[in-house]
Structures are given as C-alpha cells and as structure tokens.
Length: 542
Image 1 (cartoon, helix red, strand yellow):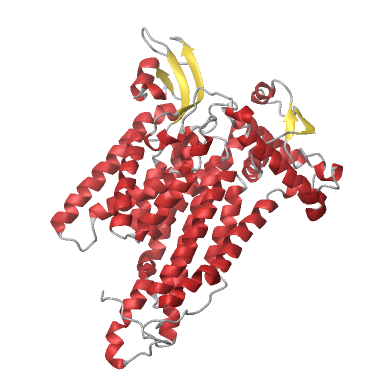
Image 2 (cartoon, one colour; image 1 turned 180 degrees about the horizontal axis):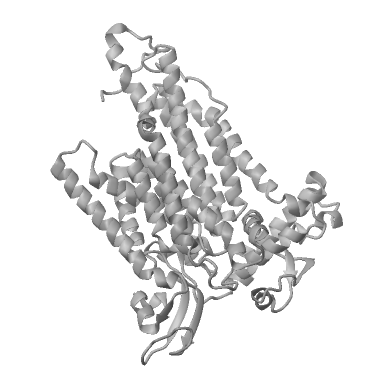
C-alpha cells in the first residue's frame, strides 16, 4: 500500500489523471473492513454453529442443583414477584425451602429494597413465565444469553481481527471457559450485562467501519484523492452508534458498572472520529471533530443509554407499591420532585438509596468467605464456591469412595490455562498497540480495563470472582488476535504457516482439555474428595 498523499494547502484536491494511481492509498486505509465482506455469509454460519455448540454444552443438567443456589435466592425470587406485582416483593422466612418443595406463593406485596436495576430480573422472569418457578425456569434466560454471548464475541473478535477464524477462535474460548459456562447456568445478572456490553462494543466497532466507509464514499463520489484539508461530510445519523448506546443502556439496566464502558467508548469515539478524518486528509480541520462529531456521540451514546435505562424501570414507575415508589408523593416540596414529577423524583431518590448502600459503611464492614480482590481476577487468584454438598458417605447418593467421602460442588472458576494465556496475550497486545501502533488491540484492552479497574476503589468491601465475566470476553479476544498473528496470513510461507498452526492448535487443545478436566466442579457432579482436590490447584481456591 502506498503512503498517504499530502493534502493540498486549501480546499479539496481534484482527481488528476496522473495521480489516479494514488487513489487507493486513502480509500483503502478508510475501507480496511471491506475484507470482511468476502465471507459474510460463511461467518454467520460459523457464528450460529458456535452458539449451538455452546447451547449443547450448557443445557445438559441445567436443572441441577434443583434448588436456589447462591444469589439465585435474590434474583429468581425478585423475578417471580416482578411477574406478579411489577416490582420486587418480599418473601417470608424459609422461602427457599418452600420453593424447592414446589410452594412458590410465599411472597407479599410489600416492596423489597433491591440494589440492582430491573432489566436482568425481567429477563429471568421471562424464563419463569415459560417454565414456572422451577430451576429451568429461573435459569433459562441465563442459558439463552450465555449462548448469545458466544455469538457476540465471535462478531466482535471477527471485526477486530479482520478474520472469521479469529472470531471463531475467540467464541470457542468462551464456550470452554469455566466461568462463562457456570454463569450461563445460574440466575445471576452478570451474564446479561456481559452480553449487552459485548454486543455494544461490537456495534461501536461496526460504527467505526461505517463512518470510515462513508468518508471513502464521499471521496469517491466527488473524485477526490483526499479531503485536502477540508472537514468532510458531517454525518449526524449513525445507526450503529445509536445501537451501541441502546445496548449500553440495557447493560446498565442490569448492573450499574457498565456505565464505565459507556464512558470509555465515549472517549474512544472522540479519538477515533478525529483519526478517521485525519486519515481522510482533513489536516488541521480534524480537530473540529471533537465537538461536531462529539455532540453526535453524546446523543447517540449517553442520551440513548439514559432513555433505555429509565425505560427499564417502567414497571416500577407504573406501580404503587414498589420500594420508595411513594417518596415523591410524600415529599412534594423536594427540588427533584418539583423538577421531575412524582414518579421520576421517587426513582431519583431510590437511586440515591441504592448508591448509599453500595458505598456505605455497612457494606464496607462485611466479610465473605469467597471475597476475591480484583487485583487477582485476571490470574484466578481466588475462585468462588456457588453450591456444595459435603460429606457424602460411601453408599450414599452413588458414592463409591474407599476410605474417603464424596461431595458435589458448583464452583465459579474460569478455565485456568485460558485465563493465564489471555493474561500473557494482553501483555503482548499492549506492546503491539503502543509500540506497533496496532489500534485493533486498543479497543478490547481498554474496555477490559474499564470492566476491571473500576472495582479497585470497592476493594474495601467483598468482591467476587464471578464479576470477571465482564473481563474474559475481551481478554479471550485479545488471545485469539495474538494467536491469529502467530498463525500468520493465508499467503505466508508454508513453513511459517505450519509452525503457527502447530502453536495455535496446541494452545487450543490444552485449553479445551483443561476445561474438560474441571468440568465436574462446574456441574454438581459426584466426586470423591481426592478427585476434588486434584482440581483445586491452589489453596486460595478452596
């Protein structure tokens, strides 16, 4: 590819016949994503195949344990009362045991104080509407979105790596990741947040390519080599960017911490729009993108996300009995109530109460057996026990142990070799991004950092490894991109290609074998204590 032609001092450079050969330089740089169109149909078949494979691995035994495990005690029950009340109601003592016995009407109409938004629980409620207040019912939505997460990773990684193979590799890593597997089989909120976040990043990347393609079309339609120092077209309607904002609003509607990804993508939008105009030859005029394209970014991302987020509270706003729902009516003189009205004033105050809970002294004083500080998440310093039945004696529940006892556990553990290889890949990716100016590594690394570093100020309270479900889609993508670089291009010399293929195959087989080895501790399988200890490689995992 030839170098970028120098822009004319003023105005747009007309297309001169003698310079016609230079035309591909600018346009090819703007349309680097055109390579993705070569196998568009095949890539969707690959995506669908991986989603189905993920479904087949995750659906087996999803109904066990046949009781509420870990924080399902909150979200499954909240979802059930959402179906009946439109808000989260309270439950009486012993409700979990009653539900396990099939008695699912132990709720009251008294509003319960909840500390997460409603969308994730409404998704859980969809499964409960289909299959009842049963293990399959409250886990069905997690299963669906856990599989959709695989597809979202494939599409995101394919666009980043400019290769369907890289996208498929990243998606396969999510299939064989222990944490992603477990979070697809339990009624928690994090898998929904992860899906919406990854899908939003995929839309952001699509918008980046869409914007550059429009700049290239402008040059082509006007017979220009480059913008020649001009600003170029002002594109106020950006459908992919709007989709990104809507999805981020949905992610925040599951858990608040997705707002950090919104902030990061907002900043990256400003940077990348300016870079695109520089590539097109805008010269000094490119700086105007910070406020002209930036205003569009605010509307498409932040405003759209806010509208979706507020919409996720619709059922609470339409109710009379939700927690804090009557606050506005009881405080009509409050400034926010006078400004926003009764309903939104109450919602604002409710958010203040939720924020106070998350940042208050009470939560900071709590302890938990499986507290895992975020510093250790990337290397799986401490995993989490989700469910356990210990001390099963020989002859009970199929236990055939000799001089030993059996147990059944569900552990929230990633696949160790995947997480460790991904950590190494992120380090390599940092060098390729900063030292080699390979922007493709910037996006997954920066977004992964946004999902991880934001937890450090909260290290004074219990934090858990399963929060890192937001991290692994992006680090696994970086691993796939680095492996793609090791494999080399299709037209690389055969010896280089064979060596690369051997390394990529070895890493993939090792990760897959590691997943199969830890599979019993992810699925409530019967194990002897010796077999369990074989899978607990570090004392911090116990």
